[in-house]
Length: 136
Length: 136
Length: 136
Image 1 (cartoon, rainbow over the protein chains, first blue to last red):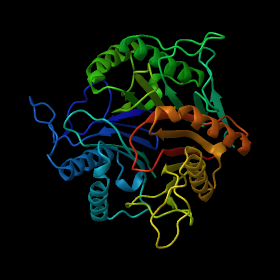
Image 2: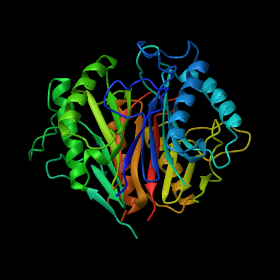
Image 3: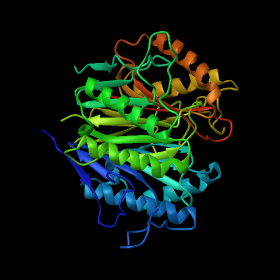
Image 4: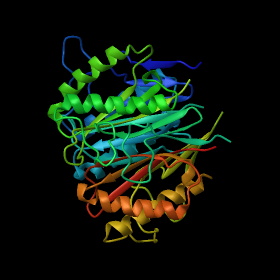
């Protein structure tokens, strides 16, 4: 019997509904869609980093990473990242930020697979990312 | 050798192409994108519950659940739900319906991770949900 | 210790950022979002098959398949396909192409689950597909 465990970093804002920021069961870890919300402050509504794409993207990566770490995983364990942007014109800049970020992380193994599509997001949000990891 | 099994609840409308409403292989169960179609009636085109978001959402949950059950899983096994809405203004109402629904289900373990994005859907459909489950 | 392996078919264009066309770890294989790019030619920018939906869709299937094969998998191992279209009016035609393609492949087991949604894609692209496979 493998248990499903919720992954709830202390820095994260409370989800807007009954879902978990991340869950882990056996060797599978799923990170829920993360956006660029700054660390939670009591009594304050969730506030995105910003206003630039760079700030939101880096905060989103930090939010994904915190969930991975909560579950004992690292970026090296990530199999798939889904990147949701609101504007096709952000693709090149997001890729630059993305490349620089992962170069800094010094990944040991193959980079994850990725899909990027352009969707609507709540007002003020420019990027959302979720991730599937398989632990070793 | 683990076999892949199609999960096809009797109540479900025939998929519009050669795909399965759900598949299970080993301990992984994937539910295809479900919409709020009412139980299939012979000779009748698939018809969504409606016209409200509430009706469509509850029918969509029922359709996902039927596939989980067909595969011997429950909501407790769901790791990830992807919610596709057509309108950002539906987010708060969907969350209310979602919370009430899962409270009724009395989940034992951590709620699933979730990503919600806003996309286009075929005319008349307000919500689509798919789900990844890992069985114990 | 299971290693994550990048799946990089020789025919594929270089990804626009530090991600892999596919990755495999243990029995899980994830195919990144594939579009209808023709096989890579040195010194030439990635060029989609086209201009029809049929040509792009068939090239996209070929690109997904090459990654599956690179990882020792086949279409029979695919659990989930995510199809991103730019236009709801393409749904019926995509399904026809899809059905004919998979009939030709002569799948042995249950067809994969599938979700189709309508999103924005970079200019000139009509379809994007990613896939999750579980190997036997």
